[in-house]
Length: 125
Image 1 (cartoon, helix red, strand yellow):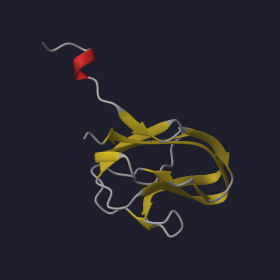
Image 2: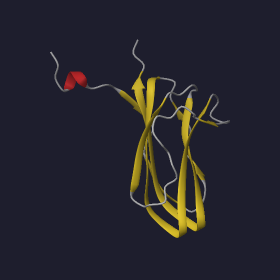
Image 3: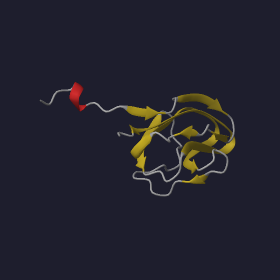
Image 4: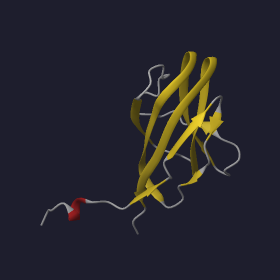
């Protein structure tokens, strides 16, 4: 019988990060060894400061949690943010164990409040 509780999936997720930045920033690699299937990422920008500030997110993956490369198979867009209080959700298929976000800022003396959250379903055996 279908009901709300039977439709829920167990999810593996990384801690949501809400932080203020005034330059480039790389998140902590999240271990997705127990994850299965497509990943989703919710990213956003709150307050922006400086002159013509921009924020660009890149989702990266790594085999060893040390050397990261950009994920290239995103479904959705991580176009550069230039408007505050904006968010996006994208999905992707990871090919490596660790996943993180990397943020670059542009403009003159840019500051931003950013948020990132990456999640996927747990493997089922």
